[in-house]
Image (cartoon, rainbow, N blue to C red; front, side, top):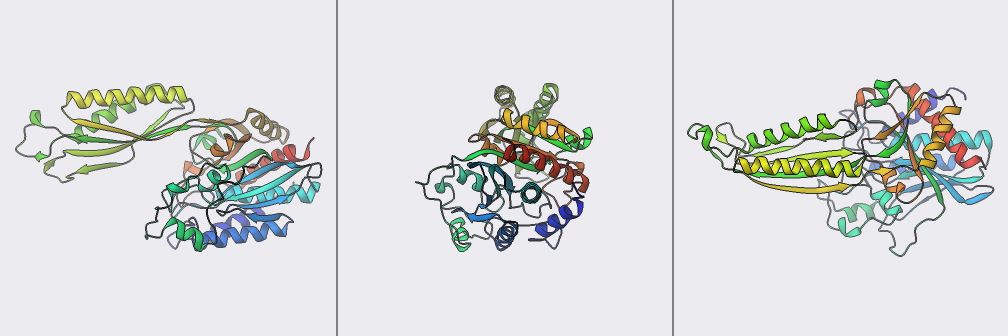
Length: 410
């Protein structure tokens, strides 16, 4: 392959520039002006290399080339076009650009594929503008419930429905059937972690996406004077929370990888220097690749928290508001990606994903797998998000080799 560095850098700079934030980073949210410019710009690029383009009802963009022998067997690749607020230059969009460049390379070098190839730029994954994530992929697979967004609004008070219709889109016809032609979906993405960087690998072949359980935990004690309330008489919810978190994190360390546990948000009332805090709400996020392990660990932690609260005379309410099961990738497609990387002489390893991706929605419906490239310092959702150009190129080479096997080989 000729040097792909310049073309990768050029395309990343172009797309991340649409929605460039004056303070650094990129902000391109579902249905906003920059989102529309990006989708239409990608549409023009797809058409310029001979792809037939179309938007679905909600704004997912497709670029397609028909297969010569098996036109109704489609190999799909791509990712999401939206960003978080003030996000980085790679999350989501690198997957679209790499897919476009892979298909461009393959058609120029090998001509028409045996199976149809399709690049997708999905409308939304992040949930950054409206309180709903995976709008693009969930609509493809008929699991998006419009009731969940009918009353949704963004921070400026703009209704989801109004933003969608102003951008020229609308709800999907509920009677529209699901696609039966997609034989494989491959998504390439930055890792958003530091595993590849620490192991010195340039490509990851992802064999599973972790399950996630998220909680809001509310503690009710008693607010009282910080000077006149003896220590033995207090019902201090911050103290109770600290004991719960300490015990839980110690157990997470003991349990070991791949389980991870995070307490990321705390709200304290009255939140003042001279009052014993009588009301605290905090979050818990627990992830694991094994559903049984995830359920058993979180059940134990819930029981520990209740026991601590009972011992301290504090009321506790545990709200498990997210319960996403782990998603295994297709072993068949994982094997194809491994073989492609091995034959191409790439520096890779098999790994799991600790973050959620559109692939977890696809994987329930069609054979799916992912490729990762390293993230410098493991940083993502941040203007400092970056990957070495040579690693982006290695990821592109992995995708080219993988799509070639899936679309061009009998």
